[in-house]
Image 1 (cartoon, rainbow, N blue to C red):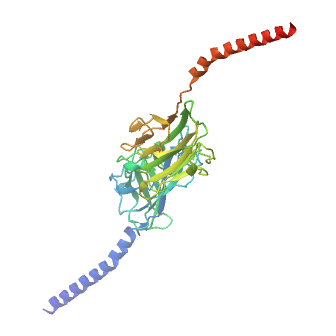
Image 2: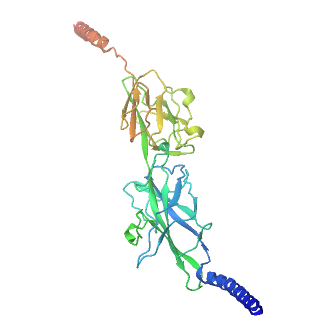
Length: 387
């Protein structure tokens, strides 16, 4: 009996020793096989905005979303691809009226400009610092740009999405730790590991579509005043607040003459128009015969109205380019679809008067006859004196 009890005690003591040993060994094993998670950093993606060389940079903030990519198993030569974990923080750049655009491609920018174009580049920032990566491999995300609002006149990149791979590696210099070695952006959104440099991308390219609005003045007729100043009012609707339009050909101040409305004297034309709150702007212009003024960079779809103050002339107007809308008398407008092409509005004022030339013709024969009679009288008087 004593031996049995002794055996049981010895067995219990042995089991307790094994359990304690296991408890000390298990943490040690965990420490040697698990990585210390590594937090990501930040990276930037380029955002290009291309426009006509005579357009101003618009007020525009692009929007992006980021989602998990598709996972793929490792192969003998490629690492495992994990679906991205966590959600990086995206900071989008703000483009603003007054920003300076580049007429030539700057060093480091991968963009092609066509004739008559310029561009501006700003950075999109992606912050992975709040995400902990726990294993070596490629963590895949899909970065997608949200379609721009219709009234912005901005057209998105033909490929609105990009693949973003975050490469996490075993840090051999510090066993048990990881490091983020690189962030690679690709235009391809497939499921395979992308190693072709041809598909690498540095960002997104959008285009800002604008059109120019030109209006001119012609005065005709034998009673028309070529030095008279006429007033034309431009009204703009549906634009983005703060947008700036450059004005060309308007460098003039109304001079004094008897044919011009005295209220116009001393008024000057602007060289720039700034859209106010609500997306509206109204501007008066003063023109003479032969003048032509161009308002540059109206975003596609912006609505406009040109109205000339009615004078004691017969008005007419002709519109070319954007043929939508109306053009009649002293007014031209497109308040439905807005401007869709470079447009010219030609105002003509005509004033004719009747010259009574027939009176001179009827009097002429009598003048001639009178001259002959007087000549005859003078000849007879001369003969009498000689006699």
